[in-house]
Length: 500
Ligand code: BES
Ligand code: ZN
Ligand code: ZN
Image (cartoon, rainbow, N blue to C red):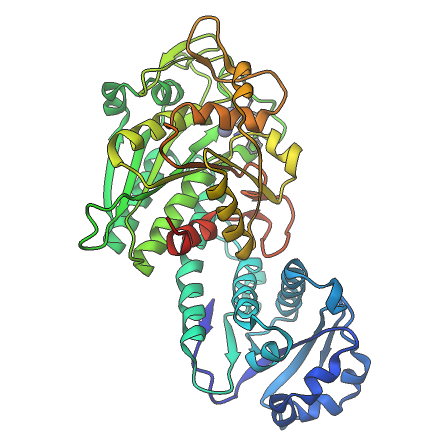
């Protein structure tokens, strides 16, 4: 799908989208742009019927002289009940109607958004992203059939009053860069684990590095063993698909000495639970246990294109968690890179084991300004916050809350959880320095608490648990069913906007 910027002449528009608040349709009628361009529509019976009610969608055809073939009227409901989540659901609905109707392109008039909203660029940006996002499908694994021949939406136009301004151009180029990276990440996440093994993931990362001039490096399993990454190696050793750690670095010229922002993503290409085997029901979904690593890779790809003035490193520990003759067992004690020994009580709490070595490696080697890790870490996070919301924790509450705000602005909901010292009591081991699980309570916090032990307090660190929003059982807000790519947009905001 393409977002077209150059629609100065209005022609060949299949479908025009007009939105309005309930009982405020006169706002549209009185706007100068609509008076000139929508006069037929505003006189039509469909417009009279349209009251702007929440969820109301009317498709109408007006005169043949119009510059569009048809119009979709979409109601926003009462203004005082309206919020940004309503916008996402209205947009999603519009695009689903468009898909059903088989339109080739759709157009949204920016002048209408300007009449309705103070921050019209936000509404435009999210309309465009939602359009691309909800229509996203992974077709790679299906054979072509005749059914696939129906018309699909391939262009979204934005109608402007004048030549595009700086802010509009920024929206377009942001969306163009964004959707490619998010699309790539979604494809990796949704692809089955017989395709996306650690090695294959690493190859994709290498391709992206070549395309966008990022520095690529790889720590093999053997190198990880030699370096003393005993926790990572323990998880990886049970699989015939060899694990590895991929590191991508983006460094603008002259910033070689700047402290980088480092993103670390959990990359378990399949999580069987290991010897602490998971039940078979829904185990297939554990192909998405690398969504954290995919979010980091997607972010690095987009950063490679956007070229922001900041040094950024992405670290992706990749492994498959399998039961096997060589697999690690419950009760094993492993020595992590930090020197801390870990008693593995449950081999299904593997994410924190690969992450703790990655975190220690970053602390030792990169002098980071901020580390943000992202992981499908605990099922408990879904119990606590539901499947549309990520848990966010860290060692500096101010940064946690700033990131939460940045995330909200791009439609990614995160909610803070505490990491008070007393929670550590649950992680005390009789035999080693720390256990990898607590008892059943506060599962998500305990996961965060475990990771916290591997980052010194003077290094700013944030942990984001995306066990819920990484995968959508059904579509929500601007997300499609399946892999979402959750986290990428927030990481871009961190890179572009977080002040230190
Ligand atoms: N990958 C899972 C967490 C998960 C569950 C992600 C559901 C997405 C959806 C993780 O490795 C895991 O198995 N965690 C255990 C932790 C427990 C053993 C402390 C869990 O959530 O049960
Ligand atoms: Zn697990
Ligand atoms: Zn896992």
